[in-house]
Amino acid sequence: MINQDAYRKFAEQASDLPLFMQPWYLDAVCVGGNWEAVLIEKGGKLVAALPFFLKKKLHWQYIAMPQLCKFLGPYLIPEFRTLDQEMRLYEALISELPDRLAAFQQDMNYAVTNWLPFHWRGFRQSTRYSYVLSLDLPEEDIFRNISKNYRNKIQRAGKLLQLNSDRPLADLQMLVGKSFARQGLENPLSPEFLNKVYTALADNQCCRLFFAEDANTGQVHSASLLVWDNQAAYYLLSGDDPELRSSGSKVWLNWQAIRYAKNELKLPIFDFEGSMIKAIEIGRRDFGAVQRPYFRIGKEWSFFWRFGKFLAGR
Picture (cartoon, rainbow, N blue to C red):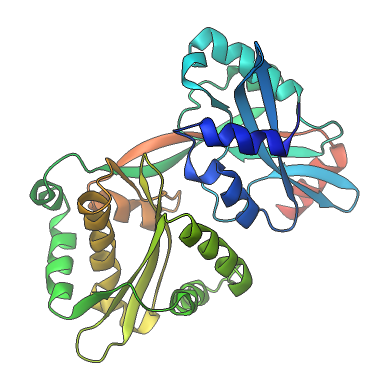
């Protein structure tokens, strides 16, 4: 069945449901469409769910990923996570997706390591990579595992900068905009959208703003937004002043967020949210982070949708 209200109740009982799959988070990020969820019931109990973001373009309906949503995909309750049950429940979830879809694309959560049921139904898969840092070691050892170049930057920047978490969200929005502009890109995140997402996160007490500012003048160099669930902290969004990048503030601020995740939140994992862009990927490894693969699953049913994608990619 497809039932958003049932998913809301289901989520209340799902203790390890990731942040990005929480109903209140989907309420915030699913702008320009509507979200729903497929659910499977066994013996009068909901055991599996697949939330999705449904959008419309002209007369086509399609499933896509919302902005600032790291992953979605199937979720199974713990007692139904054997391979045999997984196969059957994934098949059932796929069968309950809406009819007459033009296309489907989702980034799967880390728990989805088996995509065979999707393959059997004609979906395609590509492997993506995030970078995660284990926080189980003492802070001194985590710092020691950072590259020498980054350790030096952190130490130098620490003499110039101070940490502030009380500046307004608008300061982060400004630096995110400057970061996109430096790359010649339009900022896809409107102030209204960011305000909506941040308000939802703050209301659920799972976010913190970080600002690296000049210790003497208070001028802000870099900013970031850290979010978390009970499994990991996620470096959701960051921005820098292009004219002040030489201060090392970006690296220093990232280190402050790591320390907060370890020492204050007591979480086992810091998730950089990765990137397939070479320059960014190298920076993640410089922090001692390791690759964590996840699947991007997709399918196009409409010939005209596929043809439109072909023309757009030319």
